[in-house]
Image (cartoon, rainbow, N blue to C red; front, side, top):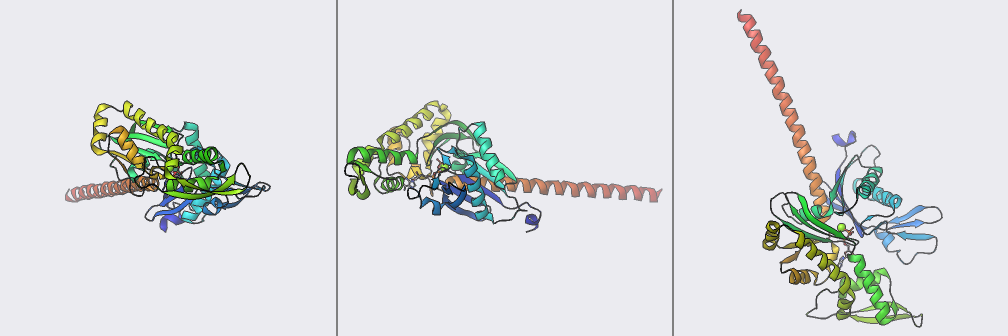
Length: 366
Ligand SMILES: Nc1ncnc2c1ncn2[C@@H]1O[C@H](COP(=O)(O)OP(=O)(O)OP(=O)(O)O)[C@@H](O)[C@H]1O
Ligand SMILES: [Mg+2]
Protein backbone atom coordinates (compact mmCIF):
# COMPACT_ATOMS: atom_id res chain seq x y z
CA UNK A 1 0.00 0.00 0.00
CA UNK A 2 2.81 2.40 1.02
CA UNK A 3 4.63 1.73 -2.23
CA UNK A 4 1.45 1.97 -4.27
CA UNK A 5 0.76 5.49 -2.95
CA UNK A 6 4.08 6.57 -4.37
CA UNK A 7 3.51 4.94 -7.71
CA UNK A 8 5.77 1.88 -7.41
CA UNK A 9 2.97 -0.58 -8.05
CA UNK A 10 3.12 -4.32 -8.60
CA UNK A 11 5.79 -6.31 -10.35
CA UNK A 12 4.46 -8.39 -13.17
CA UNK A 13 5.73 -10.83 -15.76
CA UNK A 14 4.08 -11.08 -19.18
CA UNK A 15 4.30 -13.90 -21.68
CA UNK A 16 3.39 -11.92 -24.77
CA UNK A 17 2.66 -14.83 -27.06
CA UNK A 18 1.39 -15.17 -30.60
CA UNK A 19 -1.47 -17.36 -29.45
CA UNK A 20 -2.03 -16.21 -25.89
CA UNK A 21 -1.02 -13.64 -23.31
CA UNK A 22 -0.36 -14.74 -19.74
CA UNK A 23 0.19 -12.26 -16.92
CA UNK A 24 1.92 -13.26 -13.69
CA UNK A 25 1.59 -10.92 -10.71
CA UNK A 26 4.20 -11.13 -7.97
CA UNK A 27 2.84 -13.02 -5.00
CA UNK A 28 -0.36 -14.04 -6.81
CA UNK A 29 0.78 -16.19 -9.74
CA UNK A 30 -0.92 -16.21 -13.15
CA UNK A 31 -3.97 -13.93 -13.07
CA UNK A 32 -4.65 -13.43 -16.79
CA UNK A 33 -4.63 -16.16 -19.42
CA UNK A 34 -6.29 -15.06 -22.66
CA UNK A 35 -5.89 -15.42 -26.42
CA UNK A 36 -3.93 -12.60 -28.11
CA UNK A 37 -6.86 -11.48 -30.22
CA UNK A 38 -8.50 -8.07 -30.55
CA UNK A 39 -11.62 -7.13 -32.47
CA UNK A 40 -11.70 -3.66 -33.96
CA UNK A 41 -14.42 -1.61 -35.62
CA UNK A 42 -12.82 -0.73 -38.95
CA UNK A 43 -14.88 2.47 -39.30
CA UNK A 44 -14.11 4.03 -35.92
CA UNK A 45 -10.87 2.14 -35.08
CA UNK A 46 -12.48 1.42 -31.73
CA UNK A 47 -11.60 -1.79 -29.82
CA UNK A 48 -14.72 -3.90 -29.40
CA UNK A 49 -13.36 -6.89 -27.55
CA UNK A 50 -10.04 -8.30 -26.32
CA UNK A 51 -8.97 -11.82 -25.44
CA UNK A 52 -11.40 -14.73 -25.14
CA UNK A 53 -14.40 -12.62 -26.12
CA UNK A 54 -12.60 -11.50 -29.29
CA UNK A 55 -11.42 -15.03 -30.13
CA UNK A 56 -15.00 -16.26 -30.26
CA UNK A 57 -15.58 -13.76 -33.09
CA UNK A 58 -12.76 -15.08 -35.35
CA UNK A 59 -14.16 -16.08 -38.71
CA UNK A 60 -17.61 -14.78 -37.75
CA UNK A 61 -17.22 -11.00 -38.05
CA UNK A 62 -19.17 -8.82 -40.50
CA UNK A 63 -17.27 -6.57 -42.95
CA UNK A 64 -16.85 -3.58 -40.65
CA UNK A 65 -15.35 -5.61 -37.79
CA UNK A 66 -11.85 -7.10 -37.93
CA UNK A 67 -10.58 -9.81 -35.57
CA UNK A 68 -6.85 -9.08 -35.37
CA UNK A 69 -4.02 -11.20 -33.99
CA UNK A 70 -1.46 -8.42 -33.54
CA UNK A 71 1.46 -10.76 -32.92
CA UNK A 72 2.07 -12.91 -35.91
CA UNK A 73 4.98 -15.32 -35.90
CA UNK A 74 6.07 -14.29 -32.41
CA UNK A 75 6.87 -10.65 -33.11
CA UNK A 76 4.84 -7.45 -33.16
CA UNK A 77 3.31 -7.09 -36.59
CA UNK A 78 0.67 -4.58 -35.51
CA UNK A 79 2.32 -2.24 -33.03
CA UNK A 80 -0.66 -0.02 -32.21
CA UNK A 81 -3.04 -2.88 -31.50
CA UNK A 82 -0.40 -4.73 -29.45
CA UNK A 83 -0.01 -1.67 -27.23
CA UNK A 84 -3.76 -1.38 -26.71
CA UNK A 85 -4.08 -5.09 -26.00
CA UNK A 86 -1.21 -4.94 -23.49
CA UNK A 87 -2.79 -1.96 -21.72
CA UNK A 88 -6.05 -3.90 -21.41
CA UNK A 89 -4.34 -7.00 -19.95
CA UNK A 90 -2.15 -4.98 -17.55
CA UNK A 91 -5.23 -3.17 -16.24
CA UNK A 92 -7.06 -6.46 -15.95
CA UNK A 93 -4.18 -7.86 -13.88
CA UNK A 94 -3.41 -4.95 -11.54
CA UNK A 95 -6.42 -2.63 -11.83
CA UNK A 96 -6.68 0.86 -13.25
CA UNK A 97 -4.73 3.53 -11.40
CA UNK A 98 -2.95 6.29 -13.35
CA UNK A 99 -0.59 6.93 -10.42
CA UNK A 100 0.56 3.35 -10.09
CA UNK A 101 3.02 2.03 -12.63
CA UNK A 102 4.17 -1.59 -12.41
CA UNK A 103 7.61 -3.00 -13.16
CA UNK A 104 7.15 -5.42 -16.03
CA UNK A 105 9.24 -8.26 -17.42
CA UNK A 106 8.20 -9.36 -20.90
CA UNK A 107 9.58 -12.23 -22.88
CA UNK A 108 10.47 -12.33 -26.57
CA UNK A 109 11.71 -15.12 -28.87
CA UNK A 110 15.48 -15.69 -28.68
CA UNK A 111 16.41 -14.33 -32.10
CA UNK A 112 14.34 -11.14 -32.35
CA UNK A 113 16.21 -8.14 -33.70
CA UNK A 114 17.12 -5.13 -31.57
CA UNK A 115 14.41 -3.16 -33.37
CA UNK A 116 11.77 -5.78 -32.54
CA UNK A 117 12.98 -5.89 -28.92
CA UNK A 118 12.67 -2.13 -28.69
CA UNK A 119 9.16 -2.29 -30.18
CA UNK A 120 8.09 -4.68 -27.39
CA UNK A 121 9.79 -2.47 -24.79
CA UNK A 122 8.13 0.70 -26.10
CA UNK A 123 4.71 -0.93 -26.35
CA UNK A 124 5.02 -2.13 -22.74
CA UNK A 125 6.13 1.27 -21.49
CA UNK A 126 3.34 2.98 -23.43
CA UNK A 127 0.92 0.50 -21.93
CA UNK A 128 1.81 1.80 -18.46
CA UNK A 129 5.04 0.21 -17.23
CA UNK A 130 7.43 2.12 -14.98
CA UNK A 131 10.37 -0.14 -15.81
CA UNK A 132 10.62 -2.83 -18.46
CA UNK A 133 12.84 -5.91 -18.56
CA UNK A 134 13.03 -8.02 -21.69
CA UNK A 135 13.80 -11.72 -21.25
CA UNK A 136 14.49 -14.31 -23.93
CA UNK A 137 11.68 -16.84 -24.19
CA UNK A 138 13.82 -20.02 -23.78
CA UNK A 139 15.43 -18.61 -20.60
CA UNK A 140 11.98 -17.86 -19.14
CA UNK A 141 10.72 -21.28 -20.29
CA UNK A 142 13.65 -23.02 -18.58
CA UNK A 143 13.14 -21.15 -15.30
CA UNK A 144 9.40 -21.89 -15.46
CA UNK A 145 10.09 -25.58 -16.12
CA UNK A 146 12.05 -25.69 -12.86
CA UNK A 147 15.53 -25.95 -14.40
CA UNK A 148 18.33 -24.38 -12.36
CA UNK A 149 19.87 -22.32 -15.16
CA UNK A 150 22.62 -20.81 -13.01
CA UNK A 151 24.67 -24.03 -12.95
CA UNK A 152 27.59 -24.74 -15.31
CA UNK A 153 25.57 -27.56 -16.81
CA UNK A 154 23.93 -27.71 -20.22
CA UNK A 155 20.11 -27.92 -20.50
CA UNK A 156 18.14 -28.03 -23.71
CA UNK A 157 14.72 -26.40 -23.89
CA UNK A 158 12.35 -26.58 -26.84
CA UNK A 159 9.52 -24.05 -26.56
CA UNK A 160 6.86 -24.59 -29.22
CA UNK A 161 4.33 -21.76 -29.19
CA UNK A 162 1.80 -20.60 -31.73
CA UNK A 163 4.14 -18.67 -34.05
CA UNK A 164 7.67 -19.68 -33.12
CA UNK A 165 9.65 -22.64 -31.93
CA UNK A 166 12.61 -21.62 -29.79
CA UNK A 167 15.30 -24.20 -29.23
CA UNK A 168 18.13 -23.34 -26.87
CA UNK A 169 21.00 -24.83 -24.95
CA UNK A 170 21.39 -22.92 -21.69
CA UNK A 171 24.29 -22.92 -19.23
CA UNK A 172 25.34 -20.47 -16.48
CA UNK A 173 22.19 -18.37 -16.93
CA UNK A 174 22.78 -17.67 -20.62
CA UNK A 175 22.04 -19.11 -24.04
CA UNK A 176 25.00 -20.97 -25.55
CA UNK A 177 23.42 -22.14 -28.82
CA UNK A 178 19.92 -21.34 -30.00
CA UNK A 179 17.62 -21.04 -32.94
CA UNK A 180 14.12 -19.74 -33.44
CA UNK A 181 12.09 -20.90 -36.41
CA UNK A 182 8.75 -19.59 -37.52
CA UNK A 183 7.19 -23.04 -37.50
CA UNK A 184 4.92 -23.85 -34.54
CA UNK A 185 1.29 -24.46 -33.56
CA UNK A 186 -0.19 -22.05 -36.14
CA UNK A 187 1.66 -23.89 -38.92
CA UNK A 188 0.20 -27.18 -37.70
CA UNK A 189 -3.26 -25.62 -38.13
CA UNK A 190 -2.38 -24.28 -41.60
CA UNK A 191 -1.08 -27.70 -42.65
CA UNK A 192 -4.37 -29.28 -41.52
CA UNK A 193 -6.44 -26.70 -43.46
CA UNK A 194 -4.39 -27.40 -46.62
CA UNK A 195 -4.64 -31.15 -46.18
CA UNK A 196 -8.43 -31.07 -45.69
CA UNK A 197 -8.83 -28.96 -48.81
CA UNK A 198 -6.69 -31.29 -50.91
CA UNK A 199 -7.81 -34.64 -49.54
CA UNK A 200 -11.50 -33.99 -48.81
CA UNK A 201 -12.23 -30.83 -50.85
CA UNK A 202 -13.37 -29.40 -47.55
CA UNK A 203 -12.78 -25.83 -46.49
CA UNK A 204 -12.40 -25.53 -42.71
CA UNK A 205 -11.63 -22.52 -40.51
CA UNK A 206 -8.69 -21.89 -38.16
CA UNK A 207 -10.63 -22.87 -35.08
CA UNK A 208 -11.79 -26.19 -36.54
CA UNK A 209 -8.24 -26.98 -37.63
CA UNK A 210 -6.97 -26.28 -34.12
CA UNK A 211 -9.65 -28.55 -32.68
CA UNK A 212 -8.64 -31.35 -35.06
CA UNK A 213 -4.99 -30.86 -34.06
CA UNK A 214 -5.78 -31.09 -30.35
CA UNK A 215 -8.21 -34.02 -30.58
CA UNK A 216 -6.77 -36.24 -33.31
CA UNK A 217 -3.50 -34.54 -34.37
CA UNK A 218 -0.45 -36.73 -34.12
CA UNK A 219 3.29 -36.58 -34.73
CA UNK A 220 3.92 -40.26 -33.95
CA UNK A 221 1.76 -43.21 -34.88
CA UNK A 222 -0.93 -43.72 -32.24
CA UNK A 223 -1.29 -47.10 -30.60
CA UNK A 224 -5.04 -46.44 -30.39
CA UNK A 225 -6.15 -44.58 -33.55
CA UNK A 226 -8.95 -42.03 -32.99
CA UNK A 227 -11.34 -40.13 -35.25
CA UNK A 228 -13.21 -36.84 -35.15
CA UNK A 229 -16.12 -35.43 -37.14
CA UNK A 230 -15.46 -31.99 -38.56
CA UNK A 231 -17.78 -29.58 -40.34
CA UNK A 232 -16.77 -27.37 -43.24
CA UNK A 233 -17.79 -26.25 -46.70
CA UNK A 234 -17.66 -28.68 -49.58
CA UNK A 235 -15.56 -26.92 -52.21
CA UNK A 236 -17.27 -28.81 -55.02
CA UNK A 237 -20.94 -28.28 -54.11
CA UNK A 238 -20.47 -25.17 -51.94
CA UNK A 239 -22.65 -26.79 -49.26
CA UNK A 240 -21.84 -27.60 -45.63
CA UNK A 241 -20.41 -31.09 -45.16
CA UNK A 242 -19.25 -33.33 -42.29
CA UNK A 243 -16.12 -35.45 -42.65
CA UNK A 244 -14.86 -38.10 -40.22
CA UNK A 245 -11.12 -37.57 -39.87
CA UNK A 246 -8.88 -40.40 -38.59
CA UNK A 247 -5.64 -39.67 -36.70
CA UNK A 248 -3.59 -41.41 -39.44
CA UNK A 249 -4.61 -38.64 -41.83
CA UNK A 250 -3.51 -35.99 -39.34
CA UNK A 251 -0.16 -37.76 -39.01
CA UNK A 252 0.25 -37.31 -42.76
CA UNK A 253 -1.01 -33.71 -42.70
CA UNK A 254 1.40 -32.65 -39.96
CA UNK A 255 4.47 -34.50 -41.25
CA UNK A 256 6.11 -31.49 -42.89
CA UNK A 257 6.03 -28.85 -40.09
CA UNK A 258 6.87 -31.56 -37.54
CA UNK A 259 9.92 -32.60 -39.61
CA UNK A 260 11.06 -28.96 -39.76
CA UNK A 261 11.04 -28.77 -35.95
CA UNK A 262 12.93 -32.05 -35.60
CA UNK A 263 15.49 -30.82 -38.14
CA UNK A 264 16.00 -27.58 -36.17
CA UNK A 265 16.59 -29.60 -32.97
CA UNK A 266 19.27 -31.62 -34.78
CA UNK A 267 20.95 -28.44 -36.03
CA UNK A 268 21.18 -27.02 -32.50
CA UNK A 269 22.56 -30.30 -31.17
CA UNK A 270 25.18 -30.33 -33.92
CA UNK A 271 26.37 -26.87 -32.84
CA UNK A 272 26.41 -27.71 -29.11
CA UNK A 273 29.87 -27.96 -27.49
CA UNK A 274 30.59 -31.60 -26.54
CA UNK A 275 30.68 -31.05 -22.75
CA UNK A 276 27.24 -29.47 -22.81
CA UNK A 277 25.94 -32.14 -25.21
CA UNK A 278 27.01 -34.75 -22.66
CA UNK A 279 25.02 -32.91 -19.96
CA UNK A 280 21.95 -32.87 -22.22
CA UNK A 281 22.24 -36.61 -22.80
CA UNK A 282 22.31 -37.10 -19.00
CA UNK A 283 19.51 -34.66 -18.15
CA UNK A 284 17.29 -35.03 -21.20
CA UNK A 285 15.47 -32.41 -23.30
CA UNK A 286 12.59 -30.40 -21.81
CA UNK A 287 9.68 -29.24 -23.97
CA UNK A 288 7.43 -26.28 -23.12
CA UNK A 289 4.70 -24.25 -24.87
CA UNK A 290 1.29 -25.32 -26.13
CA UNK A 291 2.67 -26.75 -29.36
CA UNK A 292 4.68 -29.34 -27.41
CA UNK A 293 1.38 -30.96 -26.44
CA UNK A 294 0.84 -32.26 -29.98
CA UNK A 295 0.41 -35.99 -29.50
CA UNK A 296 3.65 -37.94 -29.92
CA UNK A 297 5.97 -35.01 -30.62
CA UNK A 298 8.05 -35.73 -27.50
CA UNK A 299 8.31 -39.40 -28.51
CA UNK A 300 9.36 -38.49 -32.05
CA UNK A 301 12.09 -36.09 -30.85
CA UNK A 302 13.26 -38.64 -28.31
CA UNK A 303 13.49 -41.33 -30.99
CA UNK A 304 15.26 -39.19 -33.57
CA UNK A 305 17.84 -37.67 -31.17
CA UNK A 306 18.25 -40.71 -28.90
CA UNK A 307 17.89 -38.30 -25.97
CA UNK A 308 15.16 -38.68 -23.39
CA UNK A 309 12.60 -35.92 -24.06
CA UNK A 310 9.89 -34.84 -21.64
CA UNK A 311 7.10 -32.28 -21.59
CA UNK A 312 7.33 -29.87 -18.63
CA UNK A 313 4.50 -29.74 -16.09
CA UNK A 314 1.96 -27.09 -17.10
CA UNK A 315 3.86 -26.61 -20.38
CA UNK A 316 1.65 -23.71 -21.53
CA UNK A 317 2.38 -21.65 -18.39
CA UNK A 318 6.17 -22.24 -18.15
CA UNK A 319 7.20 -19.01 -19.89
CA UNK A 320 4.84 -16.85 -17.81
CA UNK A 321 5.92 -18.55 -14.58
CA UNK A 322 9.59 -18.12 -15.55
CA UNK A 323 9.06 -14.45 -16.39
CA UNK A 324 7.29 -13.94 -13.05
CA UNK A 325 10.03 -15.75 -11.13
CA UNK A 326 12.61 -13.57 -12.88
CA UNK A 327 10.86 -10.35 -11.79
CA UNK A 328 10.48 -11.72 -8.25
CA UNK A 329 14.22 -12.41 -8.23
CA UNK A 330 15.01 -8.87 -9.49
CA UNK A 331 12.68 -7.38 -6.86
CA UNK A 332 14.25 -9.56 -4.19
CA UNK A 333 17.81 -8.58 -5.10
CA UNK A 334 16.89 -4.88 -5.25
CA UNK A 335 15.22 -5.18 -1.85
CA UNK A 336 18.34 -6.92 -0.51
CA UNK A 337 20.50 -4.13 -1.96
CA UNK A 338 18.28 -1.47 -0.32
CA UNK A 339 18.46 -3.35 2.99
CA UNK A 340 22.26 -3.63 2.76
CA UNK A 341 22.56 0.09 2.01
CA UNK A 342 20.33 0.91 5.02
CA UNK A 343 22.47 -1.39 7.18
CA UNK A 344 25.68 0.25 5.91
CA UNK A 345 24.23 3.72 6.63
CA UNK A 346 23.24 2.69 10.15
CA UNK A 347 26.69 1.18 10.77
CA UNK A 348 28.34 4.37 9.46
CA UNK A 349 26.15 6.53 11.77
CA UNK A 350 26.92 4.41 14.81
CA UNK A 351 30.62 4.54 13.96
CA UNK A 352 30.48 8.34 13.78
CA UNK A 353 28.57 8.53 17.09
CA UNK A 354 31.12 6.23 18.71
CA UNK A 355 33.99 8.33 17.38
CA UNK A 356 32.37 11.55 18.63
CA UNK A 357 31.76 10.01 22.02
CA UNK A 358 35.35 8.82 22.22
CA UNK A 359 36.58 12.31 21.28
CA UNK A 360 34.32 13.89 23.91
CA UNK A 361 35.53 11.45 26.58
CA UNK A 362 39.12 12.28 25.65
CA UNK A 363 38.41 16.04 25.89
CA UNK A 364 36.69 15.55 29.29
CA UNK A 365 39.67 13.55 30.59
CA UNK A 366 42.04 16.28 29.48
N1 LIG B 1 -3.33 -30.08 -26.45
C1 LIG B 1 -2.75 -29.45 -27.46
N2 LIG B 1 -2.30 -30.15 -28.53
C2 LIG B 1 -1.72 -29.54 -29.57
N3 LIG B 1 -1.52 -28.21 -29.64
C3 LIG B 1 -1.93 -27.45 -28.60
C4 LIG B 1 -2.57 -28.02 -27.45
N4 LIG B 1 -2.88 -27.02 -26.59
C5 LIG B 1 -2.45 -25.89 -27.16
N5 LIG B 1 -1.89 -26.12 -28.37
C6 LIG B 1 -1.35 -25.16 -29.32
O1 LIG B 1 -0.33 -24.41 -28.69
C7 LIG B 1 -0.20 -23.15 -29.36
C8 LIG B 1 -0.14 -22.06 -28.35
O2 LIG B 1 0.90 -22.29 -27.47
P1 LIG B 1 1.44 -21.13 -26.53
O3 LIG B 1 0.33 -20.57 -25.72
O4 LIG B 1 2.62 -21.67 -25.81
O5 LIG B 1 1.88 -20.08 -27.65
P2 LIG B 1 2.38 -18.59 -27.50
O6 LIG B 1 3.32 -18.51 -26.35
O7 LIG B 1 1.21 -17.70 -27.46
O8 LIG B 1 3.14 -18.39 -28.88
P3 LIG B 1 4.65 -17.91 -29.20
O9 LIG B 1 5.50 -18.42 -28.09
O10 LIG B 1 4.96 -18.53 -30.51
O11 LIG B 1 4.58 -16.44 -29.29
C9 LIG B 1 -1.41 -23.01 -30.26
O12 LIG B 1 -1.03 -23.23 -31.59
C10 LIG B 1 -2.33 -24.11 -29.76
O13 LIG B 1 -3.17 -24.58 -30.79
MG1 LIG C 1 5.32 -18.61 -26.09
